[in-house]
Length: 427
Ligand code: SAJ
Image 1 (cartoon, helix red, strand yellow):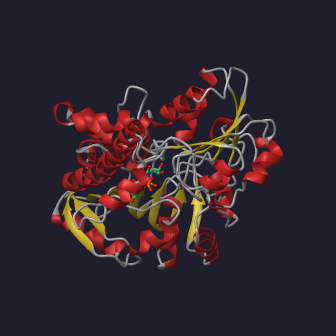
Image 2 (cartoon, helix red, strand yellow; image 1 turned 120 degrees about the vertical axis):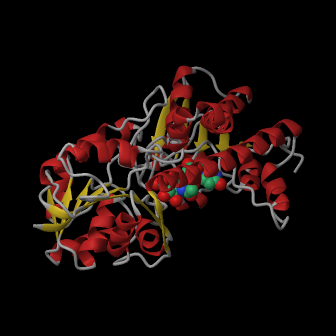
Image 3 (spheres, helix red, strand yellow; image 1 turned 135 degrees about the vertical axis):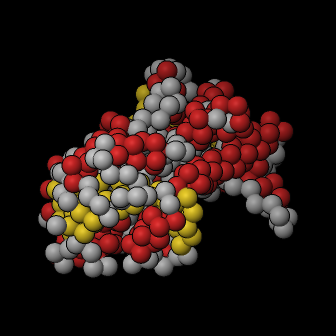
């Protein structure tokens, strides 16, 4: 019998299962995708994350981590399954419900069930707890039930899983104390106990707050563009104020968390979420605005090719879920432009074929314009000579303020920088 059963072996479940196994627990990792299970059985991990493959292979080689497609009896069940948002901006809890149902036959007195997936307020008790009550066992009385949100930053997952402070929300204080005994085996951050509903709201507040703050930076970028000012400089100067810290503008907000989570609050509390909805709209329309500026430059016409540099939603990761590149490509194709997307990390087969190639010259070849959407390290050293060698045209848009604009302008490029409204040649 496993001591811990982790359901969902994605960006959070896999490192969590591995850390628990390396901390000495007998762990069963469960996923419905047989490719993930097969890969894990041979000690491999498909995710590109610093330190993750070493962690996974150590856990598998120790014999403490095994993989399967179905849960088995265990003392602890941790649910790390996706909670996506639908086209109508409502939460899709089918994976949580399915995971809860899959452990129902195995649940026994004294077990601990933890939900980690980001979820609307009340999901732990009203969805997971309710389903598990069909066993005749009650949360808080017969088994322990908790909500323990993850807070890790993709790209730094392993480090943050160990070192971030953690919140544990218990259905009862006893439930929370039981979960604390599990997490403290690998978590070196401060662990604070609360109730399940507060922990659920807390997680949604964290990501909504970041979304709103990015939308604020993007609004400032729009103002600066209209006013003929460089927002990047203005933001840096405003952030010298001791109580002001403005985030960076960009082509929008991607990933599976920040663009999704505010909708959970909007769905449950429509009267109090005008600010959150407005932030979503601003962030979602950023890449289309950039395309508009490119079109207004007059350098592009129907049929022309644009090279999109960067499909991942942020620098130096291989994840393109909800990436601004998806919005940009859709908008460009609507304008009858041909789009070729390059990314050094995202595989061409992933994300419905978003990435055309991992070969940069092939992507740039014959392009009239190039647009940098993700500031991957490899792009920072791009030179005008390299782009000139492969591109047909000389339009360059930089959504991350990451390139040496002066060098490109000197080499004859028209350079549009998101958030910089100054007229070329005046700076
Ligand atoms: N972005 C900007 N400007 C900024 C910062 C970010 O445009 O100044 C963009 C990024 O380019 C990216 C998006 O926002 O497209 C999100 O990136 P991120 O690094 O802010 O966050 P995520 O989605 O990778 O991870 C977030 C984190 N939440 C917070 O910082 C509050 C992480 O701690 C959570 O664990 C994670 O969501 C999650 O799983 O919920």
